[in-house]
Image (spheres, helix red, strand yellow):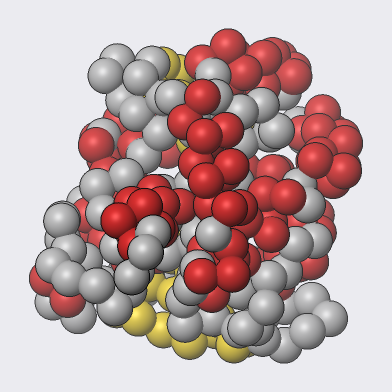
Length: 289
């Protein structure tokens, strides 16, 4: 077919746009996976669960979580980038110690979660993902907002100060675009009608983010909890200076951590750095103001 050699690379490239997966640019129906997914681990390490979204619309959400016989003191809740594919967090879930538990959902509009169309309102996304916080009053939550999920996690943290005690913003996308995302967004837009559902929804989210950023920035400024900003120095999607400004915007409890050699997809390249940032947030929260 005329043009096919051009379209295929664009489809694959679009899969990387702010996604949580730098090592694998496949859709869920493509194989092989380029690093471990949940099928490579036993169900006592991680299991897929179904949740009913909070908020006004009771969507069905699909998530991966680490099963625990008793609730851990800290619950790590990951709000993923776009496209939202929880499977690419499997290596991170597998490294969580017994004193922690972790849950990562396919956000509304992606993979096995409802709805079929894009949910471009970050407030609606945050409201829906409240279901991941759990209902144990004795359990503390640390949120990890990845890439496009950064503003959503920030809004969620501001909504639930009773549960969320620390926030990690990882490769966070608050509107400032590096060269790679500018290029891939433009290419993806050219072939949008040919893209699969998740890619179309990802582009719709990016297209509609900018007018909502003041809400997320206001939420960030209002937080009194520790905010750890984690960013790779080899991230070509989001400028390193943008991450430093984000940490400054978080105020006196903001902290910037640079990951040497880390790209945009730290959950693929740098799992230990991600978990160290989480523990830094926990330590900061437990030490008080």
